[in-house]
Amino acid sequence: MHTSGSDAYLHDAVMTATPEQLQLMLYDGAIRFAMQGRDAILAKDYETVYQRFSRAQKIVLEMQSGLRPEVNPSLCAQMASLYNFIYRKLVEASINRDVAAADDALKILRHQRETWVMLMDKLKEEQAGAARSAPKVPGRVPPRGQSEDSETTLSVEV
Image 1 (spheres, rainbow, N blue to C red):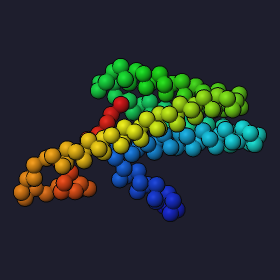
Image 2 (cartoon, rainbow, N blue to C red):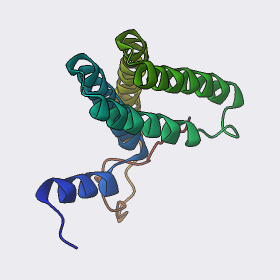
Image 3 (cartoon, one colour):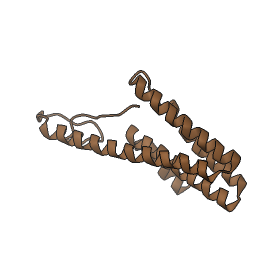
Image 4 (spheres, rainbow, N blue to C red):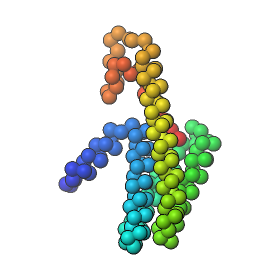
């Protein structure tokens, strides 16, 4: 099977990404496809409207299926409701060719993405602080992908 350079790049990016980075990629993809669907409504390109909103909907469903209620049931319930609302707005935008519905979905997706980036930044700061305060262990070999200064890997599951 022959893959293009961009397909190979995307494959490598996904395979080497942290869970936090993968979530950010999902937000980016949902926003990109929803924007393309919105633009297609304005261009009256209805086949593209369907294709792009369908891709955005699949990404939102993927984010929803990745929720882990056993970790934080109340937060997951709130996020599931939010993803359900976004999904319904994307369907509405596609079926009714409704720019306002697309804008509603995009507004929330962009806000969630911004919040996610702030959370990732906060985690990096906490990891850097923990690494600076962690005692050095002579002879310790760090896990692959970590520097000698980083002691722990922190992941966020929603």
